[in-house]
Image (tube, rainbow, N blue to C red):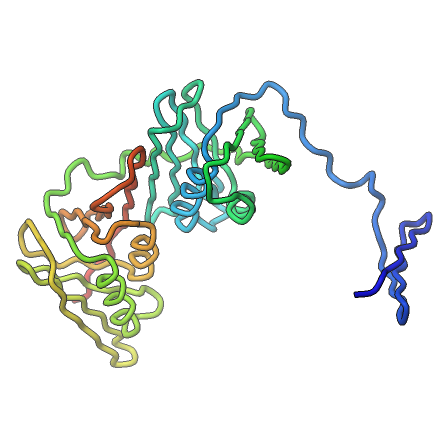
Length: 289
C-alpha cells in the first residue's frame, strides 16, 4: 500500500500521483449530479430484511426483459392491511410470493424496476433487521440503518395476473425437487436449444422426461419415481424455466398441479414457512408430433 494524492483543478480534471506514477482523468461538474428525489407525501411500512430479501430472490428471475412491455420489467408490490404480495411475470411464467406476517397501512400497489431490486439483493443482510419502506406515486425509498436507496417506480399498469392462474388443476404430481432438477438438467442437454422443450409423460407412479433435437438427431429420456393423482398425461415445458422455478422452492419435494397439455402448470413447495406462500406458474409448450 502507498499513499495517493488527488489534485483537482477548476475544470474538474483530476490528477492522481503516487511515489512512482502520475495519472489524469477528466471529472464532471458536481452540480450536474442527479439530485435525490424528495420524499414528499409518502406512505410507510416496515418488514424484516430477510423477508424482503427472500421476496426479491424468489421473484426477480421471472421479470421480463422486454422493454416494449415496461409493466413486466419489474416486480409488482401488492399491499394490503393483512399481507404483502410480490409478483413477477414475463408472460411465459409467473411467480407470486406472499407474506402474511407483514401488514401495510392501506391497500395499494406499485412496480419496482429490476435494477434497484438487484442492488437491494446485494446490499440487504439476511437477518431480522427492520427495513423501512416509503413510497409515493413516483418513487420508492428504502432505509436500513445508515444505508438509503431511492428509485423511480415504473409508470405502467401491471397486467391482471389473477386471470391466468387456473382455478382448479385436478392432477397432482409430487416429486423430489433435487431429483427432478437433476433429471431436467441432464435431459435438456438433448433438447432443441431455441425451445429447451422437455416432455413430461406421467403414467401412474412413473414420470418419464424426454427431449429431442431433430436437426442434430439428439435424443434423451429418463425415468423417475413420483406420486401422481390423475389421468395419464403428456405435457411439454421449457426445461430452463422449470429448473429456475424449482430453485425457488425450499422444500424437499414439490407439487406440480396440472390439467391438460394446453393449460398452465402450477408448482408449489410441499412445505412452507409460517407466514409465507409461494405459487409459480409456467405455460406449456406445444407438443411435437
